[in-house]
Image (spheres, helix red, strand yellow):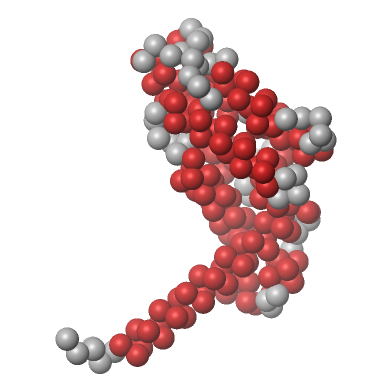
Length: 211
């Protein structure tokens, strides 16, 4: 079959799209580093541009403002974790084991990993109602509670729940906030806090499954 007349154009567009996607990822990586160091409020687009080795205008070509950049950074982190560890699968055992595996991944990266520090920084800043991530983080916690509730209900239906079924909403909130309590301690003093063991121990209190 002969090539179509527009093959050269389409190949050029494909290369351009790939280059644009790569540059976008470089910007997001730079933003994660900047937000992990200075938080959203202390970071400027120029800070991100310098880290990405781009011009200020080059960053704005991909993200119209700092808020759009923040949303993209958070979306990428959340979707990566959800896809890798199946935290929204609805299967209780999969959720619990995925939660432990997520902690193990973060622990293996170490306390200097920008993404973990960035997420904690933004979550803390977002307590302010005027912060651009306030609504985002509120929705995110709601989604985590929802996934935890579905997981616990699944475990209850299979006779694997260790707590009274009526306590599931309370347990779901505890699971959603588990890393909020552990991460700052671990990030500040990793030699004194075993992140994975603490997560595993807490989840074992809810379910009779191997973790």
